[in-house]
Image 1 (cartoon, rainbow, N blue to C red):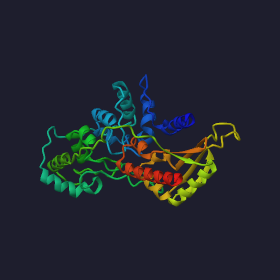
Image 2 (image 1 turned 90 degrees about the horizontal axis):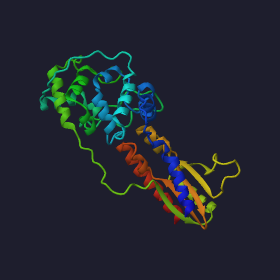
Image 3 (image 1 turned 30 degrees about the vertical axis):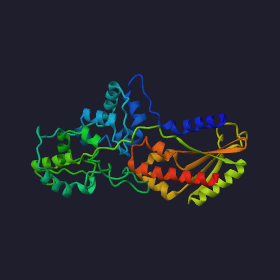
Image 4 (image 1 turned 60 degrees about the horizontal axis):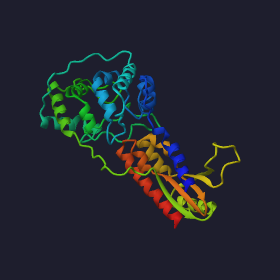
Length: 351
């Protein structure tokens, strides 16, 4: 039993190491950005999975308060995670780094102090000008805007205007400004240049405010187990063969089998009683990567076999537990499917 417990600890460390965000004693914005933001927002804020932070128009529109709320609260249900543990000093340092991505800020623009619009007119204008990118109910673009076989069509995926955290972080003036003057470097046009009046833009802002959707938080309960575990009787070679057959029967391609300790101990001294089986369904892989490239941290799929006595424990990472860190509802659904597949394979192996 101790061997199984120790193996769980090793696996948890290997799998979850990449998700532990550091808390720095002395705020250093460059390091904070590198550790927590760069993987999604790109080096120097050029964008990628996340919004390009180096666009002058974005920085013109995004106040420090907007950035603070966005970092602290994230975007529940979208890709952007929350960082509620950052101190005020760390946030200030991080925002200073982000502001440094723009050498020549966009020129200030004229924005009404009070924005009052007509909902009916705004709804019609929204459907004409915004729904194609942002969705009929402001649900936003799907996935992450990143493709792997060709350049991206745009520097940014359309924002979810219905996201409660986005709505809470944005002021009416910020929404009006983005609509009126657009975002150069993205598909977002200037609607003043498109011929809309200032009042029509105010009408759209009024309608956008009606799109706010409350994000359903999961009910409180026990933390989701990071692993799915099953036990099978027999030799490790017999169980390994059963795993291979079950993987292939589940429409996955077997990639390789290797000793668990490979690369961690001297070559040739690896334990024969600990092995990893790697396998993949490439259609599922491409679909998941298109939604959120961070899923590559725990793909391809793998099962770890550990023999103790006359039984072999078979471990699988619980994709649902890991996807909780990604804040992406579409990815959550794929990870639920992956968990069901793992469970079906383990059931087949242990029958």
